[in-house]
Image (cartoon, rainbow, N blue to C red; front, top):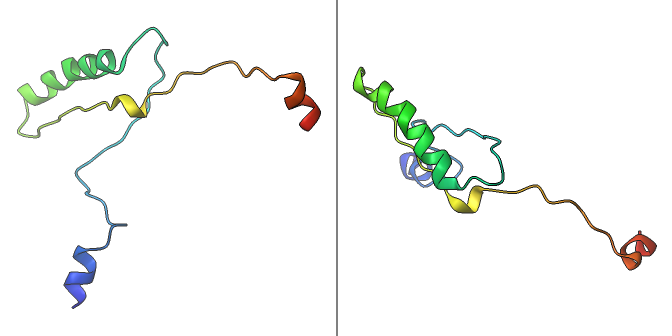
Length: 77
């Protein structure tokens, strides 16, 4: 029973994944970041048995927007 509980524990994550955050210009898309990082990892993959893959999900990208408050918002606060 112990190994089944451990195997099904969703709080356990793969140790083969590494997450980073980048700030890029808002004119760039997630594909731009992904292809740029892939160019770097090609060099790493060419001289090592260690393989690095890159995936940038569009849903994980955010753009800073200025906060605009209406008069009603200000009165409510």
